Image (cartoon, rainbow, N blue to C red; front, side, top):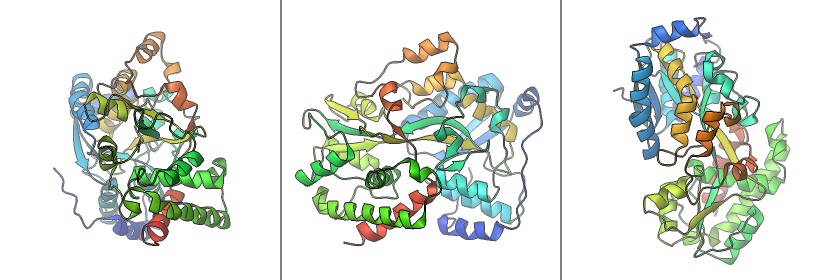
Length: 410
């Protein structure tokens, strides 16, 4: 198993990215037919580097995907769990600097947002390949959250394999009538000191809470999908930091400390220390009820103005040793079978990356008849309240601004 050295961090890959900007090799997609790709993929081992902190995801990959890919295509899938995909991007940057243009250890990556932008900018990816996958026709590429990854055009360099949307989690026994807008939530927090908190950015769940406040302050979500001005960003971001700084004394432990992860936040809700949690995974509350970690009275909601959603993707590095095998894996990930299995709450409960309406009636019925957890909102409720992510540039700047003005500015 490859070891990722701890010193290959965000700072390193940022510096190397500047070094490489003028001396990069363009990587082209395969010109082979799909039957030829299937033939070459047989017997290959695909090393998939991905975040390994979700038990349901790990079970899906190792308990279902790996044996099924071996059975159907003769492809061996090996999950390589990591904590931060940025370290993997750093590794690939170093390999490119060293001229290692083939024989790479990383065959497939689960990446999003800023890491995709870094890879694309420095031409670290194989492709475009997504339009070569037979199942790409099941994906609605017209959706902004599919054609763009945190504001960065996908351009066929990634393939989706799931989607996510933020939901708020609460206990109906303690909070029978939760606030349904961001404004009402802010008022509720002020009137109920100590009963709310959020994970500290750059944790992704904590960071998305900050982005919801940013959208609320600006009053315009669509503006941030285009060419916003620096002056406008500074005005709205400064107002955002002020709102969050003013809110801090009303938070759990007076905002002097924050949960480090969603896991800790879920535990605080379960223990009755706070009255709300949040998750990018709409079925998370149902999963925790099923596992006995939440009481049966827990439910979820989305804000009336909507909650942020995004798509998660896989990409193939430019020097992957097993590109054909990686393409076969990417294609199977968006097959009706694999998407249905993943959507099952007993397995994972992840939202589909494909458009169910494009499937034949038999598969549509199978998706429709999937069991739904007691705390999981309907697809209609979720889809009608989706907000897009802002560009990754805004995400990064808000995280740094929160650290400076909210965490350290008090």
